[in-house]
Image (cartoon, rainbow, N blue to C red; front, side, top):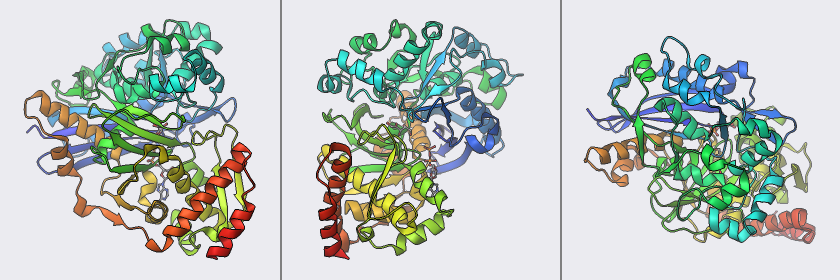
Length: 540
Ligand code: ADP
Ligand code: XUL
């Protein structure tokens, strides 16, 4: 009894559910719905749709709802009884915004079990699609809001991040500017996380401090909506935003729809949902300084726990609320898995073949370097996609494969320097962390051990941990984060990938060279060709 907790993760490409068991100390049920494959009628590619032009990237909130129904249909066939689940929390891809009309709350309050969720919710939207984190079309709005807030430094001081394409506030401003009458008709604006939480709750849910911080609307110190940012973004915005809550806050009991339809216990508690990165922070067990995680999902992210607020005044890094109530630091690359896939697909390879070629190409790639901006990038900021190759061309298979992987981790090492501390261990998670050969390059470039745990669904797992923590606190059987994490994250079952000391100097030099290539292309820096030839002479 008191032992089952459900974590859900509505990510870019899929919706995943996992149930953890506190007696067995393990995951007892896992299921996932891949949007492209299992809901093909939405016609998404990698979970998204490109509208107007390649900078405008949206998804369908109704697709996420349909995925939820499909997921529960699948999960209820397992041997686990939903009735035993004590608490549920969730995770959503960060920054995406969902625009709801006045019907929404009435609809979720009065759900009829004889009908599907989709049929009952389809008239709830004032905008059928949701701009998501991959959208890069809000530069004008970012500039306007930043200026109104007094420029880069004061914006970062206030919000924990620069105003940035990806973030919610600029998306909202763009909607208000382009479709003011639809903005007017919008009663509530949710994040992906709080939208999905609302469906399960049967009323409009609150936004947590983890995901709220990724909106360019929350004051990072007071953790309240910031009046100046609201005003700079769009009129009457405060009325349209749900209130904020601590990530561990209980938001209510599960809606009767899920009780009647799937057999959940009416007493099941719902804990605030959060963003996928804050959930992953807990899902890989990061509750102290010294270690960082790298998630290789659709986006690649580099993140760590922060006990105190620490800001990146250059504007590339972000600070979000952590599930513990403290903070986390994060940098995010838009060119993550989909950029790797571009190379894999260009040469028609499987991941196994990709790895084979990666391994037989020398460390340092014979001095070939790539700047891998297949899509607009935020770190560093590159609004127009461009892939720059130094010393090779797009048809060089070895050069491209090692080129992209080395570029991604060199860039991460370079741009995470603001966090100050060199990590003594990196926890790897996300879809591409299944690839040991990619993780070996990561270990070598950072000259740091990389650990991969048994469960790679760290966002869903983190959500389940958060559900458990808040539930046990509620019933006065408090458990520390350590107790929870140690039950499920088994170091004995993890894989430790050690850096190869032979390449320390090579990658230190290559980092320097990569920085030169980057500033040559982006900041009119010196031509790196002489430095590149010196690098080749030294190592090949
Ligand atoms: P998200 O949570 O953002 O929806 P995931 O964390 O599930 O995404 O990661 C999905 C990505 O994982 C895919 O786009 C795919 O490129 C990548 N991936 C899966 N398996 C491998 C592998 N063996 N090697 C490299 N990348 C992989
Ligand atoms: C983080 C970010 C992405 C999304 C999707 O800032 O934009 O990592 O959360 O995973």
